[in-house]
Length: 195
Image (cartoon, rainbow, N blue to C red):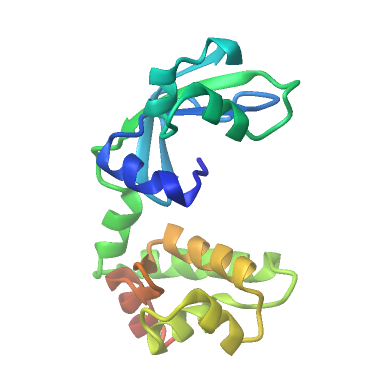
């Protein structure tokens, strides 16, 4: 789920536990974890509500001072249903973190990573990027995404999306500024002499 930066601290510390969204159809499911810039959350309930029934208490739980400010700030088409999304910080470990920590790769795992990187490269409209991006992150740890993108002549937003794909494979780790190669990514680069 996407949240504006002003809500991140409250999501992280558990004081923001509600969100209201106007969606043509429900976008999240109860019982599922979702990644946010403030950390992972678990959605506990989703209901359709009448916007006029949103209380000031609900608004404060969503990080707004009152219902009027929440309604004024509610994006989306007013013709769409308004969803009340209840959530809490996820307590289980992020599977990507556990995957990234694995620095001992079997030959079959190396082959699978290579296969997935090759697939990402083939699907790209701008050519092979996966190994170049891994090497770039390795050479410039914790460097701003915009700086890294500029080094290879790419736009920042699509570059960040691509790095997220590498993170989903457990090959990189995010930091407050920039990225680093994970132990799994290091093991892969070492095993393939940089890909």
